[in-house]
Image (cartoon, rainbow, N blue to C red; front, side, top):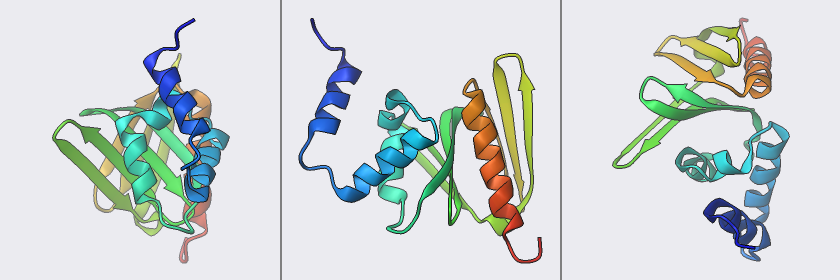
Length: 150
Protein backbone atom coordinates (compact mmCIF):
# COMPACT_ATOMS: atom_id res chain seq x y z
CA UNK A 1 0.00 0.00 0.00
CA UNK A 2 1.43 3.34 -1.10
CA UNK A 3 1.11 6.54 0.92
CA UNK A 4 0.03 9.73 -0.84
CA UNK A 5 2.39 12.75 -0.94
CA UNK A 6 0.77 14.51 2.02
CA UNK A 7 0.69 11.36 4.15
CA UNK A 8 4.36 10.77 3.33
CA UNK A 9 5.24 14.32 4.45
CA UNK A 10 3.27 13.86 7.66
CA UNK A 11 4.88 10.53 8.41
CA UNK A 12 8.32 12.08 7.95
CA UNK A 13 7.37 15.21 9.94
CA UNK A 14 6.14 13.32 12.99
CA UNK A 15 8.88 10.69 12.92
CA UNK A 16 11.68 13.18 12.35
CA UNK A 17 14.11 13.23 15.27
CA UNK A 18 15.05 16.80 14.33
CA UNK A 19 11.72 18.35 15.35
CA UNK A 20 12.40 20.89 18.06
CA UNK A 21 10.39 21.19 21.27
CA UNK A 22 9.10 24.56 19.98
CA UNK A 23 7.89 23.00 16.70
CA UNK A 24 6.29 20.17 18.66
CA UNK A 25 4.45 22.70 20.87
CA UNK A 26 3.20 24.57 17.78
CA UNK A 27 1.93 21.34 16.19
CA UNK A 28 0.03 20.50 19.40
CA UNK A 29 -1.44 24.01 19.62
CA UNK A 30 -2.58 23.82 15.98
CA UNK A 31 -4.17 20.45 16.65
CA UNK A 32 -5.93 21.85 19.73
CA UNK A 33 -7.58 24.60 17.65
CA UNK A 34 -8.75 22.11 15.02
CA UNK A 35 -6.26 22.54 12.20
CA UNK A 36 -5.81 19.37 10.19
CA UNK A 37 -2.56 18.09 8.72
CA UNK A 38 -3.05 19.42 5.20
CA UNK A 39 -3.56 22.97 6.41
CA UNK A 40 -0.57 22.79 8.72
CA UNK A 41 1.66 21.83 5.80
CA UNK A 42 0.24 24.44 3.42
CA UNK A 43 2.32 27.46 2.42
CA UNK A 44 0.78 29.77 5.02
CA UNK A 45 1.27 27.16 7.75
CA UNK A 46 4.96 26.86 6.95
CA UNK A 47 5.35 30.65 7.29
CA UNK A 48 3.56 30.55 10.64
CA UNK A 49 6.29 28.38 12.20
CA UNK A 50 8.86 31.10 11.43
CA UNK A 51 6.66 33.99 12.63
CA UNK A 52 5.71 32.80 16.09
CA UNK A 53 7.71 34.34 18.92
CA UNK A 54 9.21 32.11 21.64
CA UNK A 55 6.51 32.79 24.27
CA UNK A 56 3.64 33.20 21.82
CA UNK A 57 0.80 30.68 21.93
CA UNK A 58 -1.94 29.99 19.39
CA UNK A 59 -5.50 30.48 20.62
CA UNK A 60 -7.40 30.38 17.35
CA UNK A 61 -6.86 29.81 13.64
CA UNK A 62 -9.01 30.71 10.67
CA UNK A 63 -8.09 29.05 7.38
CA UNK A 64 -10.14 29.94 4.35
CA UNK A 65 -10.66 32.16 1.34
CA UNK A 66 -9.77 35.83 1.24
CA UNK A 67 -10.13 38.11 -1.79
CA UNK A 68 -6.78 36.88 -3.15
CA UNK A 69 -7.36 33.15 -2.57
CA UNK A 70 -6.54 31.02 0.45
CA UNK A 71 -5.13 32.72 3.53
CA UNK A 72 -4.58 32.14 7.23
CA UNK A 73 -5.57 34.28 10.22
CA UNK A 74 -3.94 33.35 13.50
CA UNK A 75 -4.94 34.68 16.91
CA UNK A 76 -2.24 34.33 19.55
CA UNK A 77 -1.93 35.50 23.12
CA UNK A 78 0.02 38.53 21.80
CA UNK A 79 -1.41 39.52 18.39
CA UNK A 80 -3.39 38.65 15.29
CA UNK A 81 -1.57 37.67 12.10
CA UNK A 82 -2.88 37.57 8.55
CA UNK A 83 -0.74 35.36 6.29
CA UNK A 84 -1.24 35.12 2.53
CA UNK A 85 1.41 33.13 0.64
CA UNK A 86 1.41 32.57 -3.08
CA UNK A 87 4.24 31.80 -5.51
CA UNK A 88 6.42 34.92 -5.65
CA UNK A 89 4.15 36.73 -3.16
CA UNK A 90 3.97 36.88 0.62
CA UNK A 91 1.78 39.22 2.64
CA UNK A 92 2.00 39.23 6.41
CA UNK A 93 -0.03 41.70 8.47
CA UNK A 94 0.21 42.00 12.21
CA UNK A 95 -2.86 43.37 13.96
CA UNK A 96 -2.84 44.40 17.59
CA UNK A 97 -5.95 43.56 19.59
CA UNK A 98 -6.13 47.19 20.68
CA UNK A 99 -6.68 48.29 17.06
CA UNK A 100 -9.73 46.05 16.51
CA UNK A 101 -13.08 47.82 16.24
CA UNK A 102 -15.32 44.79 15.66
CA UNK A 103 -15.38 41.09 14.88
CA UNK A 104 -18.33 39.78 12.87
CA UNK A 105 -19.35 36.15 12.32
CA UNK A 106 -21.97 35.10 9.78
CA UNK A 107 -23.03 31.55 9.01
CA UNK A 108 -24.95 30.56 5.90
CA UNK A 109 -25.31 26.84 5.31
CA UNK A 110 -21.91 25.17 5.30
CA UNK A 111 -19.92 28.42 5.07
CA UNK A 112 -18.95 30.96 7.68
CA UNK A 113 -17.73 34.49 7.00
CA UNK A 114 -15.54 36.21 9.57
CA UNK A 115 -14.85 39.93 9.25
CA UNK A 116 -12.30 41.78 11.36
CA UNK A 117 -12.66 45.56 11.35
CA UNK A 118 -9.48 47.29 12.47
CA UNK A 119 -8.14 50.83 12.38
CA UNK A 120 -5.67 49.91 9.63
CA UNK A 121 -7.52 47.51 7.32
CA UNK A 122 -10.52 45.22 7.27
CA UNK A 123 -10.15 41.47 6.75
CA UNK A 124 -12.92 39.23 5.46
CA UNK A 125 -12.53 35.47 5.16
CA UNK A 126 -14.88 32.62 4.24
CA UNK A 127 -14.38 29.11 5.49
CA UNK A 128 -16.18 25.79 5.73
CA UNK A 129 -14.46 25.05 9.06
CA UNK A 130 -17.37 26.33 11.14
CA UNK A 131 -16.19 25.18 14.56
CA UNK A 132 -12.70 26.64 14.07
CA UNK A 133 -14.25 29.92 12.88
CA UNK A 134 -16.50 30.14 15.95
CA UNK A 135 -13.61 29.38 18.30
CA UNK A 136 -11.40 31.92 16.48
CA UNK A 137 -14.04 34.65 16.90
CA UNK A 138 -14.58 33.81 20.58
CA UNK A 139 -10.84 33.93 21.28
CA UNK A 140 -10.40 37.26 19.43
CA UNK A 141 -13.34 38.78 21.31
CA UNK A 142 -11.90 37.59 24.63
CA UNK A 143 -8.45 39.01 23.87
CA UNK A 144 -9.99 42.31 22.69
CA UNK A 145 -11.89 42.67 25.97
CA UNK A 146 -8.65 42.16 27.92
CA UNK A 147 -7.17 45.31 26.35
CA UNK A 148 -6.98 48.48 28.47
CA UNK A 149 -9.83 50.87 27.72
CA UNK A 150 -12.21 48.18 26.40
